[in-house]
Length: 82
Image 1 (spheres, rainbow, N blue to C red):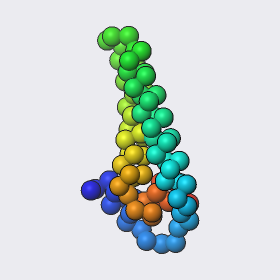
Image 2 (tube, helix red, strand yellow; image 1 turned 120 degrees about the vertical axis):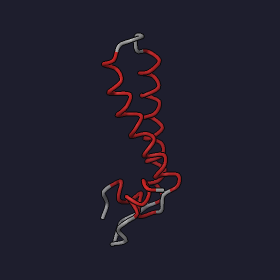
Image 3 (cartoon, rainbow, N blue to C red; image 1 turned 45 degrees about the horizontal axis):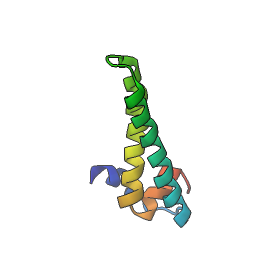
């Protein structure tokens, strides 16, 4: 998957704890919930609500993909821990 290759490209030293993956999945779920809530509560035809939906939804999807399918190095790179 190209998205995972982006985060798994470097095999240098990294700091990883199993709680990092769990926290990433929980926070990504909250981002998706926030995007869904914005989608539901946005008045019809209001285009200014699409930017937060794209940002929070994109962050949630990327976080869930990396947290669910990625290797430990991908999770550590997403957290920025080296």
